[in-house]
Image (cartoon, rainbow, N blue to C red):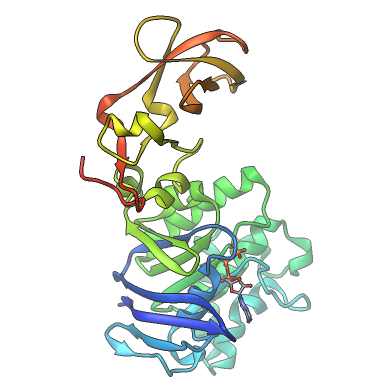
Length: 334
Ligand code: ATP
């Protein structure tokens, strides 16, 4: 079991209120990702759960038990860091076994657990190697192995993949997700990479300046962003946000339409504009169109339309996919 509950958790450093009242219910066995811009408080919130920082006020419960004042080692959680934090002079086996040895577990049992973890993580051939003789991905797997053998109630990951190159990140992302489902252990994962968040999470917490803007499944956040912040943060390229009289026609202060929900045509209906930039990715083309009275809108088209910079085009938003927001930036009902 490993449910985690935050109740109105606040954290200040000096006079700076870094976490401004976070309430959250993380279900046992779920994979929850904290995402948000740099400095929004993701790592601080994770460290509060771990017990590496003390809350200023509020309560943290694990499986219903108040752990707000319980030291980190007694919370039954395992943390995996971006820096791996491996002992350079110890073998892979020694690194994975370290926590169990310190806890006084008998050698036979340690060997069994270490070998089990190594097998799950494809590290068996490397058990006697030192970290310096491993690739970045293998090192990260050792760090994960060390977390697994402790059989924690939950894993806490702090940007564990950000030191890896792009291809390896994608591979490790899938490995971590598969492993978490296999072990059915609760995971809380910090990243600033929204693709990681969207692909790994059962539920995402979007943080902004120390506040939770929305907590929901990736699809909920994509289809029903609660406010302008989430609308602009989730999705790549970003949702087009349009104000002024255009939004007024829809009974809103701002409307949003995602680039993939705009059809680009050479004539007919729609907003008329001039193509300022065209990015040809092969599979997709991103077109940036300057529309008078509206602004620059991004449209994403599948494949290659042969559209060139300077061409005049018509943009037709899918009327069913238009998001409407009030003057406070809150989503209006569809
Ligand atoms: P990033 O994505 O850049 O890692 P983050 O969302 O994880 O950012 P945090 O590391 O949680 O952000 O930091 C949130 C804010 O709290 C930042 O403004 C940071 O400077 C501040 N902060 C963090 N730790 C401390 C500390 N020990 N003392 C003072 N301020 C701190």
